[in-house]
Image: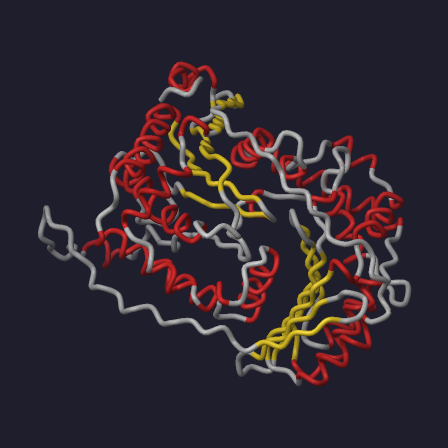
Length: 481
């Protein structure tokens, strides 16, 4: 089942922001203590952070098998653990109009159904005995079969994963439970405003493309058969679409031999599907009624350049300053200054040869229109005026620091390598990323905003109580603001 978290993920890595839990209760003694006296009217300036550490990509080894399968191995860390991702270029991109979520259901059947050589229970027990487990995730462009386990078992786990990927039994017995889970997840998603908003946003941007199909219907799920999953597997899985990534502490020669032995016999299969969308680029207002809703969920965005474009890193810097960080302009405006919302965020979501920019916020119903007005105001302000060097420097420091953290785990390294391979960015994308972020100038940020954030071409989706927000939305029915 596709979910909101899958579609708004930052390329190559899923990020989630959370606030620390804070107790509102204390004992009687603490309750009687006077709070420390503080100067009023003055906001303390936090001490400046240290310079972010530079990032060096660990040395990698690559090779290919005659059937087209590619392999990347990275020695990383000191713990005796290994992460292996078998990434197949098969996902929702490969689904037909009546097959929405078939890639997910096929993946779950592969995971839970065992192989023609091992029942599911045996697969799970063997993986657990190696200090790990095998899981599967299906996204827009690919399906990942991954495991994290103890280093001593690397060749054995690779053989097990090869059996799971190449010889799934796809049994009829597991399908009713998987379909029931899919129906339950669908009902949950349809009961929440953000998934509803994103579904409409994607459908509006990509009306005739698989990227625009977020949720299946109940009828679709009920009609899926094992034959559908078997056909999807045979049509979309194979060595030519597969790239295996290994990161951690392991013997390179032994792992290379294990992969060669386990995967050389896999049929080449089809080449990856290349089907870039032609997204909508016109002002559209879409409203979904949720009677009595105390909040309105906003999606404001438009298609933009994909990661292979030279402007993409400057675009990321622009987004961080505009809405993509807790200290961004839109957050400071509608959260800090006006109190319209708690946690708005800006995102650039990328798929193969495609990306979109969006600002997302849950705002109080009474300020639905004013919130849109302020979001568009901040966009226009940045399009007309370059930020100060000081403001921009803080955003670049933040991005550089987050980038280093993003690469501080085995899975993080794999995610980044898979990202540059999918988007054909070249090895120097990672090694020069921090340098390229710091090279972005204030004028360049303004020019990027002017070039790519045309509010007259934005899709605006609002989920809220129509009876209370219709008049507020009147100014946004057309290209005017």
